[in-house]
Image 1 (spheres, helix red, strand yellow):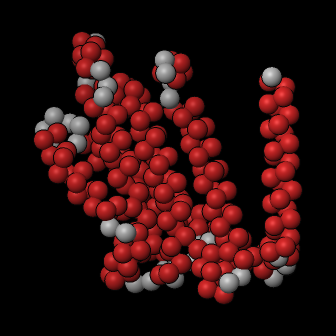
Image 2: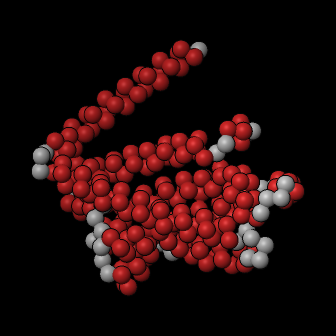
Image 3: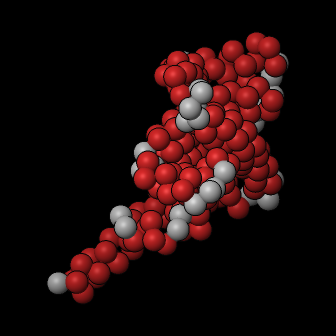
Length: 243
């Protein structure tokens, strides 16, 4: 039975690759990618897209994790609800509106795009950091206190390691959202793969549309895979086996 399923899986992959190849050939995508003048432009837009995602995710991770940790401390815990509500306002506003607001006081280009993407990515990270640390069993914290560990050491060696899986889930969600939303940065002159996508839509050129959409999809899948590897590196083996 397993051999049959493996064979069906291999045949399905072969059929998908064949259909994709025919589609790419008929839409002119292969010709576009092989054009020595177009290929450098596509690579430049890809690098712009990757730059916006990387920088905004660094900022969002620092802000989100810090906010989540601070709101789990005893003196700030009462403000967790209102603070999460304020942080969540960034995602209640449509992404295009966030970009437009950022453009209104930062101008056009990469800076407002990174600012808007950061605002749009903070909530999942902050919320999951708060939820993960809050869910750490109290007896583990009490054990740390009983061993004479200071609060900072308890945070770094007990709370964060036990909450890491939940934190990484928030990071993963934020990263995928960020990659897709970064395509909209084209409308405020920040470039990125959205340039190809919207140009293809406006000019009804399927090859340009696919040249932008396919790398965004592959980038999201690759980011998801990297998040899995990050989980293997940061989550202790004992916690992974206990799932």
